[in-house]
Length: 325
Image (cartoon, rainbow, N blue to C red; front, side):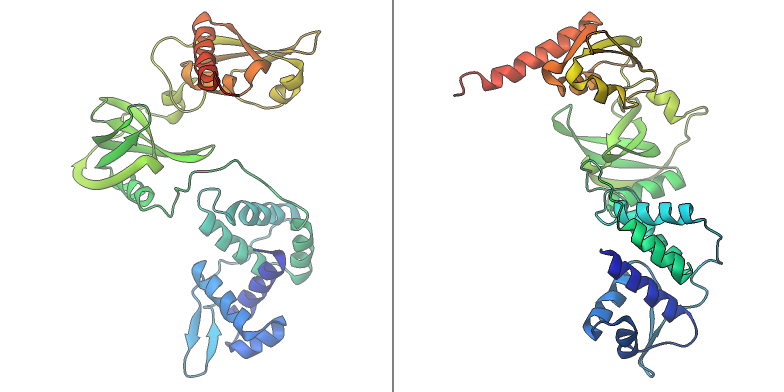
C-alpha cells in the first residue's frame, strides 16, 4: 500500500466520520480520483474493520462518530513510530496482529492535524524495514484462534502434530500454557500427554485441533523465562548447561560481535582480528545449526561434544556433494 493511497484512506475516514455522510461522486471529486477507485478504497476500509455504513435512501456513506477513541496527544516521534511499524511490518503480514495494527495506524493518522499528517507521510516514505521470512501462520490461522480460546478458558485440546524431529504425525492431548512469536513463527508451549512434560510446538505444524471439556491449571511459578532457561532459541535440553567457545575469523568477526545473539554471550577480539565468542546454553543442538551457517569462518573450541557434533554434520553435508562435477 503506497503512501498516496494511505493518505487518501485517512482523508476518507476523516470526512466520513465528521458530520453528515457523503456519496461516492463527492468523495471521488474531493480526493481527485475515479468513483471506481473510491469504491475500492471503501472496501479496503471495510476489510480493515472500519464500521462503514451506507444509507441506501440517501446514497451516502458514513462512519459512526463513536468509532474512534478520544484524541491522544502523540509526539511526532511517537506517531512516526506507530505509523512506520504498522505500515512497514503489517503490509506483508510479516508480524503478529498485522491486520489490527494496520487498522490502528489508519485511525491514528485520521486524528492527526493535516500538517503533521503530511509531514509524517513524507518521513515514512523515506523509511523501509525488512524482516526475515516468516511462517504464514498467525492470527488469521484458525488453529491460532482456537489455541487463544483454549488458553483463555483453560481448556485442554487434542491435536495432530506434524513433528519434524519424530518424522511423523503425533496425536496428543495438550494443555496450552503460552503462545510465543519468536523470530519467524508462532509457538505454543504447554504440557504434552505423550511426552509427559512441557514442550514447544510450532503452531504451523498443528494440522488438526479439537477443544476438549477437560480443564487444566498452569503450574504455579511457571514462566517462559524459567522454562526456556539458557536455550539458544526455543528448545532447552536436559542436563547441565554447556559453556561454549567459538572462534570466528576476521571476515565475519565484526558482524557477529555487533549482534546480541544470547543473554549470556561474551565477546573478545584477538590481535589477528578474529573473535572469541563465549556463551552458556541449555543444549547444543540448536546452536550447532547456527555455527554451521558460518561455514569455515567459525570453529568450535569447546566443549568437545559440540565440536564433534558440528564436525559430524559438516561431514554429512560434504558427503552430499561428493562426486559432483
